[in-house]
Length: 288
Ligand code: CAA
Ligand code: NAD
Picture (cartoon, rainbow, N blue to C red):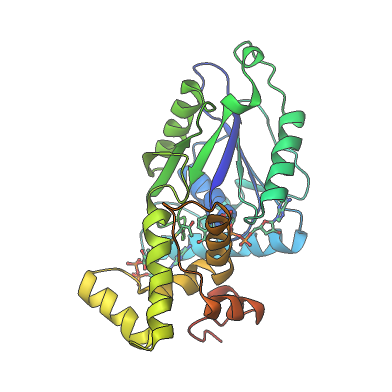
C-alpha cells in the first residue's frame, strides 16, 4: 500500500522533473497535484495500458475543472494544466535531469520488484554524488491518500539502512512543492495511517457479519458519532475492496504477532464477484 520513490537528483538541486509509473486512481492524482503546483519542468505519466492513460487524462481534466469551479484551486485553465502532463506507454521521461520517479502500480510484490530492478538499471546515476551511492540510498517511500488532489497528507518513509539524508530531504521538499504536508514514518506495515485505518475497516466488516448493525447505520454512526468524513463502508468502496484485500493479505503473510488483522470472507467473496466499490459501480453500495 505504498508508493516507492526513486530519484536521481544532484546535490543541492531541487527536483525538476517527475515521472509517475501507473496511471490509475493514485498515479493520476499524483500527476494532477504535480501539474497544479506548476513547479516542474516536465511531468510524465506512464502506464502499460493506453486505455488507462486515456482514462487518466479524462479524469485529471474533469477533476481540475471541478476543483477550479469550486474555487478550491487557483488555475486559469484546466486544459492547459492537463497539458503539463505527457502521457506515455514507454518508461521515457521528457527530461531526466533532477528526476523523481514515483511508482504507483498495483500492490503486487513481484511486479513492483521487477519494475525497481529495471529502473535501477535504466537510470544509473551519473552525477558526482551518485557515483558513490547505491540505488538503495536514492530510494524511499511516499505514501499518498485518496483522493490525492484533495488529501493534504503524504507519509515520507525512510527505509532501514537505505534512504540517505539527501534523498529524504529531497522528498520533504517535493512534498512541500506540491503543497502537501509530510510526516515521517519508519518503514513499518501500514506506516501511520493505514496501521490504524485498515484494522478499523476490517472490524467494521466483522461487525456487519455478526449482524450487530447495517452497513448504512455503521457509516452514519461513525460520521455523526465520531466526526469521520466517510463511514467505513463508504471508505472501503472509495479505496477499492481489492486494495483492502491486498493489504490484509500482505499483513497476514508476515505472520507477525504484533500485526493481527481480521480477514473477512465477505470481502473475499465480493472481490471474486468483481464488486470492488466505486470503480466497478458496486461494492457495499450501488453506484450504477
Ligand atoms: N477531484 C475533484 N473532486 C473530487 C475528487 C477529485 N479527485 N475526488 C472527490 N471529489 C469530489 C467529489 O466528487 C464530490 O463532489 P460532488 O459531491 O459534486 O460529486 C466532492 O469532492 C466532495 O465534496 P464535499 O464537499 O462533499 O466533501 P469534502 O470536500 O468535504 O470531502 C473528501 C471530500 C475529501 C473525499 C472527504 O469525504 C474525505 O476526506 N473522505 C475520507 C477520505 C479518506 O479517508 N481517504 C484516505 C483513504 S486511505 C488511503 O488512501 C490509503 C491507502 O493506502 C488505502
Ligand atoms: P489502480 O488499479 O487504480 O492503477 C494501477 C495502474 O497501474 C493501472 O492503470 C495499470 O494499468 C498500471 N500498471 C500495472 N502494471 C504496470 C506496470 N508494470 N507498469 C506501468 N503501469 C502498470 O491502482 P491504485 O488504486 O492507483 O493503486 C496504486 C498503488 O497505490 C497500490 O500500491 C495501492 O496499494 C496504493 N494506494 C492505493 C490507495 C487507494 O485508495 N486506492 C491509496 C494509497 C495507496
